Image 1 (cartoon, rainbow, N blue to C red):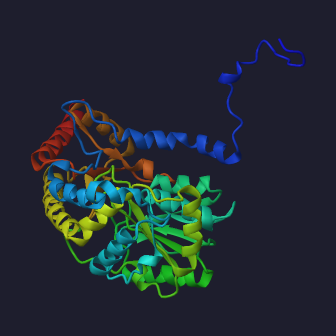
Image 2 (image 1 turned 180 degrees about the horizontal axis):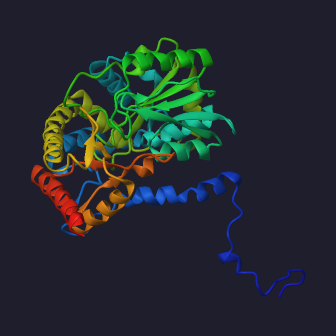
Image 3 (image 1 turned 90 degrees about the vertical axis):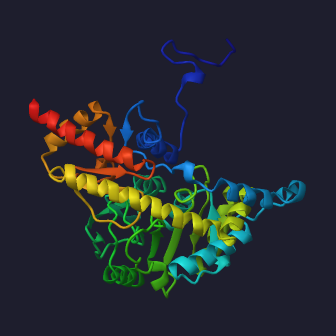
Length: 409
């Protein structure tokens, strides 16, 4: 052994020792369980199981020929265009296409120069937290809500402030905070739509606090009933709202393209931060193909086609639950999205037993407890976008049989 190097018998080899992580790294690892639990939803269910747990895109209905044509166009003659990168904020053609889409579908007068493209919406959210949150700052989020937002806030040094949601969405309050994350068009996971009056209250709060609001537009593009209320961004006349969207739920999961429509005051800082991570915007081929797909009308046709399909599947689930499980669950009303939130109407003890009985009958669903930061009443999420109508009906029938099985014991 070299002189001056001491060793102890109980000290593990260097390769096996835990790394000396920073405070950020330690926070990351302390929350790794949330990442693992999220990944479990991506796993295929056992053979023969009808799973309402995963809301995957039904790729058999995807317009492959139009998408292949857009990819071919984006590559240029002999792939020449692939040599031309895109700036950190994303390809300008895609940003123009997104701006046009937002004007046409949401009534938002979007400037392409105020749009930044990200590798999925979560990358954009985390970067916003890093730019806008100092250690110890409170950040308001919905409860129940997406656990990735809670994780992103806390890893950025902020203190998540879970705030209750009712059947009309987030309940406004005079929060002592400088940032709010909200999903007003379709609250995740309950599906509640925030009324116009509450939206105005939130904007007044942001104005009085000089705060920012991140409007997460997740899971609201597929709307088969009713007319959507104006987004917060459309009502924002003081540059307080950051509008965040994604194409992963409307196209396919592997298309990691999200975006943020920013207030003018934040554009330069966000672009500089994005450039630190990605000096050249990634997935340029997919960005240019998506721009072509949107501009040529393929994206709009895809949304309309899938909206009709999902609407029929939602109705099958709703009718089935009302006919066979009305005494077990109360479905939250909804007119958009890829899943339904349902409150359990029996005891908490019976809910745990029912989950196991349903599993034995070959049906699975998501326990909504994972979305609650404070304990709430038992509830479940039923994803339906990936299931045919016959599978939905069979799944509901199996749940009804599972309840009958419980009554026999």
